[in-house]
Length: 459
Image (cartoon, rainbow, N blue to C red; front, side):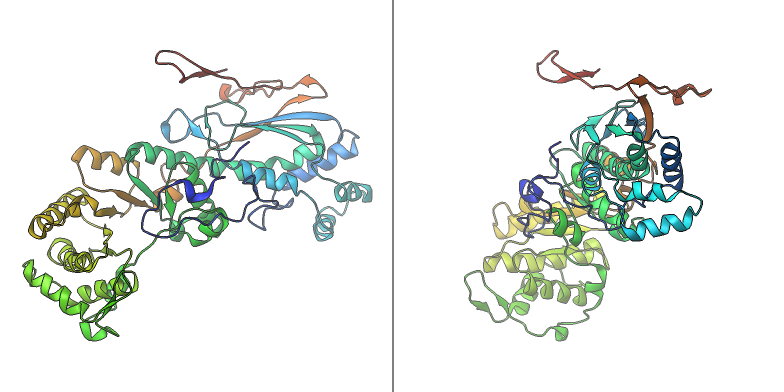
C-alpha cells in the first residue's frame, strides 16, 4: 500500500524553524529495501516457529498452501478503532528474507537432532511465493479485520509469524495513541514527539518517532528519525543551558548579527534597556544571559524555555526583553516553552503579557504571532483537561505517555491459520473471544450516508 509517511516531512508545516526538506533514506515507494533495524532478521522469531517448520518439513507438508490472518480482538485504550502501522517494515523484511550461513550454523547448534536436509531447505527459503494483502499504512481499522492476509507455503508463512507481529503490534499501538492525542489536542495545534529518552530501548525510541508521525504528530526531537524518515526535527534548549550562565561576563561577545548582514555591537545593552523600559527589574541575570546567548546563536528562531527559575517573574520577562530587542533589529522571535506548573494558567498569563508588550511598543501581531509550547508529562487526559480549562498553548511536546503507551502497554495482534490446502481452518476455544473466523477474507469499506462521502461501515 502507499505509505502515510511516504512524503516525508515536507508536507507538514515547520514548528520551530528547523529545515524540513530532508527526504529521508527510504526508496521512492517509501519502503526501505531492507529493514531499518539490523536486528530485524529471520532469527527475530520464537523458537517454536522453527520447530513447527521442521515438523512441517519432516511430514512433507511444508509446501502446502496456507492462508494466515493477522488481526486484533479488542481496540486499544478503551476505544473503538486502531491506526494500522508497521506495513513498510513488514514489506522490507519479507522482501529481504534470507537465512545466512551464520544463522544456519546457530540453528544447527540449537537443533542437533534435525536432518541436514532441513537446513538445506532453510538455505533456499525466501518469500518469493508469499503474497500479502494489507490495509494501507495509516488506515483506521477495527477489531477482527485482517490487517494482513498472508498466503503461501505453510513453512515460510509460519516462519514469518512472530516477526510480522513484532513489526505491527507496537507500531499500530503508538500510531493509535498518537491519533487519540491528535483528536484531544485538536486539528490546529502542533504536536511534537519528545519521548526518545523515555522509550523502551533504542529500537523502541526510533519506532515511536516514526509511528507517532503516522498517527498525526507534526515532528519529533529524534534526530535519527529525521535522518531516516524525513520527519521534521525540532529542538531548542534545556534547563541546563540556562543554568550554565550566571552573568553577562560569560558571553564571548555583546554583539549580534542583523538580518541584512550588519552587526549590532551592543545587543546586551539593548536588551537591558528594554528590560528596564518594560519594568522588569528583578529577573535572573544568568537566565537573561542564556537567552542573549541563544539569540546570538539562533537569531532566526529564538524560542526560550522560561521555567528554570520563576516562569512569570523571570522567565517570561527575560524572554520579552530579548524578544523586543530582536524585533527592533528586524528579527522575528518565535516564542516560549513551558515545562512545569499550571500550564493553562501560565499560558494565559504569558499571552496577556505579550499583548501588553504589543500595546506598549505598537508591534502589530506580536502577541498572536508568539508560539507557546508546553511539555511536562502530557497525555490524552491532560489535553482534554487543558481544553476544558481554556489555554493559550499552540504546540504540545509529548514524550513518556506517548512512546511507552502507559494507558495500554500492548495491542494484542494475533496471527491465525484460516485456510490450508484450500480448506477452511478454525480455532475453537472455551473463551469465545478466541474463536477465529475461518477462510480467507476481504474487507470492504462502504461510503455514503447523510452529507455524502463519509465511511459508513466495514464488511
